[in-house]
Length: 241
Ligand code: PEP
Image (cartoon, rainbow, N blue to C red):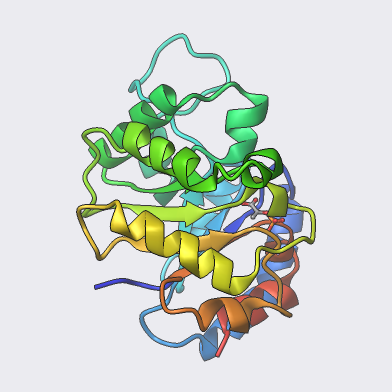
């Protein structure tokens, strides 16, 4: 069965003190969160331990923003599956466009990271999406199709979330129209072997547009950047109607 998964991607924002402050404002709102809705927070690595202790027994699941494919080794700046699971992590974002764009992630390394996440019992959130240039050139469908084909080689679709994130909509305030996001997500689903994979939309999701986005039949949740940093706005998104 497809689950609703709302995940906050904090990117490189929030110290541990700021994280505690966020939780004081955010946690009381979860009393209104409908049953069965997964709420995930993906903070910087330094906040995982503090969150894991504070969130124990709460509705929030912990997510990480990256994972390396080796268990350990000389890979400066990377983090491994056992390190994440020891910190209580259950989800991990893989292939975010900022990783692909600024840190030279390729479909081959995305594939390795996806398989590593599953090897350690984590649920990867695979991000795919096109640039503005690719959209304008009519390449959206072929680009996403190629990303899925390469990224999902030997990946188990029984433990997977996908986020459709048009790059031109990330952090720009320029949201993809809900119906268009629904169309592309339907195309993504048609390329999967498991129809029950939850597929999120990501790209300038905010309190003002979450209801329309979640009303679309193909959209199973949201990956939220900027609006997940503020307790009231993330609470409104998590508790959408
Ligand atoms: C993201 O970081 O994945 C994202 C969608 O960011 P924003 O919501 O700020 O556009």
